[in-house]
Length: 228
Image (tube, rainbow, N blue to C red; front, side, top):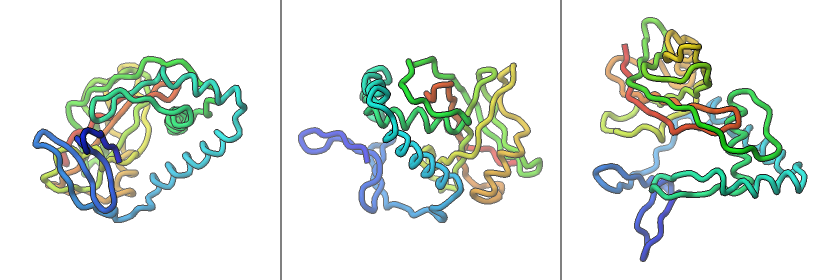
């Protein structure tokens, strides 16, 4: 739950009790929290396992190693959903970078690195081709760069921003031309195994973000998928 305090509260985003707070161009909204059909998906179990392992590794770091993460806090500032600059604690920075490195099969960093350039991504649209059993992204991607592919379950037609519904499906590395993702049957298989076979008329979001070698990630780009 993310809250921005004013005289009482002037903004909020996230979960609180049985409700979800969000904001859009229409203003702030509150809705009842919907329990996922399967809260123990393979992807969710993997994320929990990663965080558990990283917590154990953090406790095994030397004082010098932990100090490097504390000193790096100011170097990895981020912009939250309210547009405010925020800093992660040393431990959270350790978890954040290394959880992303885990996705691309890299060993955890024990000492804090220096920030690097984050890969860019621009998506025109995404396609779920049920006939060819593949997922495609059409847009601009950097060559030889790793991108995380995400998908949502079927959502209500009235949902405009599906980023909170997205779940990690798989990681893909672009070719030397960096011309997008095409004929990705293995990502389609993961989607179907995680959610279900989509049909024409369903509303589904696809998402993608890039990761650099130290675990920094770009902002997630989410689009409504065209289902064929």
